[in-house]
Image 1 (cartoon, rainbow, N blue to C red):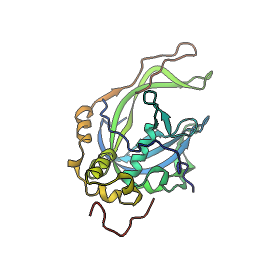
Image 2: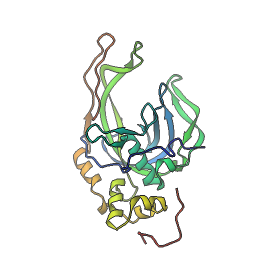
Image 3: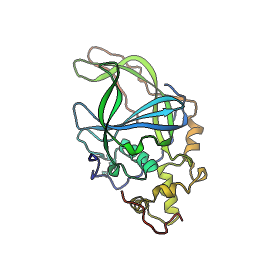
Image 4: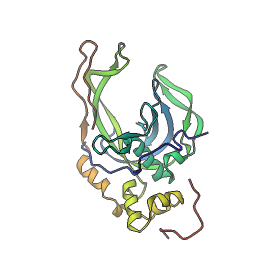
Length: 268
């Protein structure tokens, strides 16, 4: 099965940056998650693609849908200030997951067509569906920064087809960052670590040595997780707008592979 992201034109930067945000449903914290399913989805009315993760966290299923391309199927956008091409945040987020768990960029991941049980919103129950999966992630563990958020309840506007606020709210969980299991480091911190050793991140990935490098790291090499927890642990981030339907219009808001070679490497 071909990988739809293989050969996609990406921006020069491929490393997800680390931002400390403010603060269902699990409380905001860092958890160990086991990836049950990672599959590629598509918008009904455009070429926009997402990657949906079904993860087990302390015996509870956490679902995260991350949009990785725009309506034209592109994974980059033009920065209004710098006029440079940048990767979509969702693309970088899923790419970081693939790098931390499989040691590969998302475009180099194997894609397998599998039949999995997924919730069907029309049938209101789980039904077998055929989807394209990043099966290399299945059964693997990863650490996740999981945020509890208060968001608008929405209803479909029959006139526009859009889902819009009702004036009521609900709580949900959102994955805001992935960390390597064990060492609790981000992909950005991994890149800095490799640079500090005199290596080149892209070359390490191409040579299949990324996971070997990550395994030489520990929590002392990463500060982001501690900073994020200090600011966010136990807090709920309110993203709701307080808007309510008026006629046909509602308010809204927006929250801003190569095989390893038999040779000595940077991490020996």
